[in-house]
Image (cartoon, rainbow, N blue to C red; front, side, top):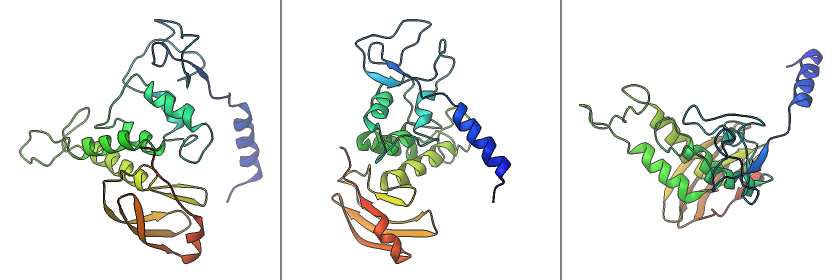
Length: 219
């Protein structure tokens, strides 16, 4: 589906990319060089860039390594580095287009992910149709809350990496669900989860069941 010219170009781009920048926190947070240097005794975290100035928006670009780029996550190297980075972020936001839910669920942070999912789905406004989500940054009727909430909820139940299918990586033990989810390679995963245990598991096609990994959530 690709040409040799394309592959050569992509290899060059990959080769030219710098290493992911890391540094130490300032008072427990991602450092802002324009305001204060990092603390030599701070925790090691991922930085937004090798060089950057003061903040200009409520974003956490250092966590784009978690989502959308999925370089860190449950079952991947340096998970604790990414988790420390999440808790050191300077712009927490778990409603509207805030990515706390998506990123915390990928990192297997169950308490954070469940709080965000609840916040997204219940962030109602005061408009005539009461079930419309509140317009925090965009418009009525808001779809950001529902979209991010659904991504968060599915990541709490299932995360796929290559052929691996990880179930319940961030699912609270006191939540019960019947689920039917689509995974890569034309795969469907169905089951029931209750008290932290998965039952009635059905994987289609059946040979993909060997790729299923049940994960015990962190908290």
